[in-house]
Image 1 (cartoon, helix red, strand yellow):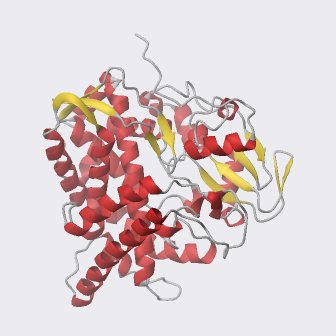
Image 2 (cartoon, rainbow, N blue to C red; image 1 turned 30 degrees about the vertical axis):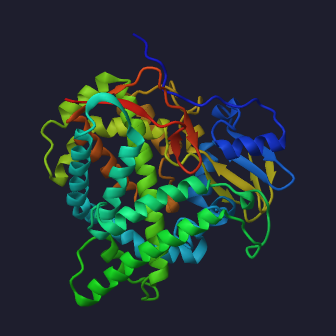
Image 3 (cartoon, one colour; image 1 turned 60 degrees about the vertical axis):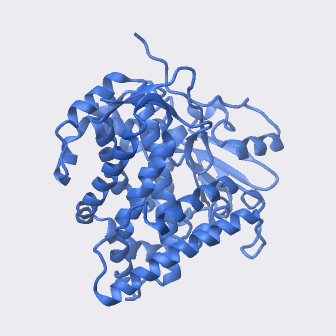
Length: 452
């Protein structure tokens, strides 16, 4: 029996007015794009305010992300909407500031440290299973809410050795949800060029929630600094980052800098993981054969880091879900000098749009690009595409520092949930992908959950 393709938003007409495009873009990045981007190597878009180029050509992607990343820094137009919360975090910085931050942060996420965080991930998975047991009645459950809770719990346990039920963690999680509702990723600053001192306009609720979240994170950082000074701090990610000095200048992150980094760890680590896990569970609900394979593979899973390497089917399923629903659908860089892309002149200041969403579904790069087929990851063609057309965590020097962490977390939580519960689709409730910061479902992802 032929299964329906996973949901994909309808594309807009090829030609629309600028203001229509801006309205569509603000409502949803994905459906604001024309269908031709799924087969084009490059597309140019000009407005009175800026010129942008979306690139799907693997050679250009490698040029921008791997070969000459310093010549294509992150654009401030997208990041401007996030600064009230993220400040000067590693997600928004460029140049020497970014390089210094990565020199301090990266050691916390190296391979050996991933093993150290496994017990905290496992504990968060057990807590998620316990919460969902009360919902496993065979009735519809909005699963994004549950994956958000689980992903936030992983962040707090691995960063600060506290569960999400801790008072400060609970308050950060609650205020973050309010902040998301008040501030889309794009605001006026994303479209109007101007100097860095030009005022940026944010809703009062956006500023209020950002201040409150940063104050709460500041308390966590301050408390941890006291434990570090006393020699009693737990050996978790926060301690590792706060005690690591830049090998070039010997300086550590200041308290304010640490607040910036914790804010992006929570935003990136929680929001992207929640999105990826929710979409994976939906895909498994609509593809029971793969769900049953994961349940069988995870039946003997034990709280031992070495077990992760045996979850091959689970990993392939998660990879495929990241291909179809990359949590961060688009990234924007900026040209700093004259360039030539596919015989077109690219001027300084031009926006370079990199779209994992379109790249992962590109008709010239993938066989049956819109189909859910985890078996593709065992083929040589997929291995080749992984090198050239697969970047759920970006690639090159600016690859997400927590990419390995996210893969381990996603595979582990998926295995722990599927071996305990059966997930089925809710009739008549097909989720519609939309994207602001991450790819979520317009009205949530509803699944029926029952004990396995």
